[in-house]
Image 1 (spheres, helix red, strand yellow):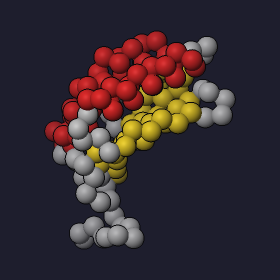
Image 2 (tube, rainbow, N blue to C red):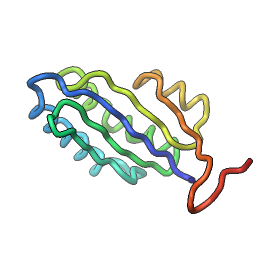
Image 3 (cartoon, rainbow, N blue to C red):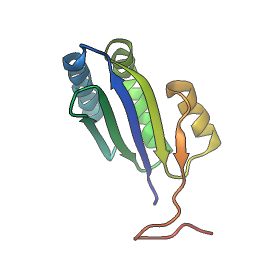
Image 4 (tube, helix red, strand yellow):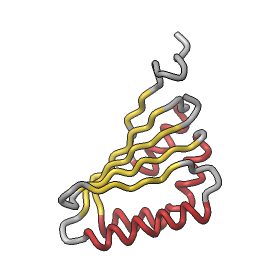
Length: 124
C-alpha cells in the first residue's frame, strides 16, 4: 500500500452548517498553502447536512503529523463551534508511537492494516 489513508467522520452541530462549511474551506485553504506531503484532503457532507466525512491521504506518518500541525487551530475552532463526535480511521502501517500521538490529539483511531489488493499483497 505504501501510504497512509485517513477517513474522519464528524457530526455537524444543529444550525451550524454554513459555519461548518466555511471552517472546512479554511482548513482546505491551510492545507493547500502549507502542507508539503498531503496527497488528498476531500470533504463530503451527507444529504441533510448533519454529518461529514473527510478523506485524506499521506505518503507516511510524517505527512499526517505535518498536516495536523498546520490545521491545529482551525480544527480546534471547527470542533468548538461547528462539529462534534469526531472519529478517525487509519488505513496503513503505523507505529504504536504514532497511534499514541493521534490518540492524544484527536482521540483513539481505529486502525486497519493492508491485507490484499489488486496491486500487491501484504507479507504473510
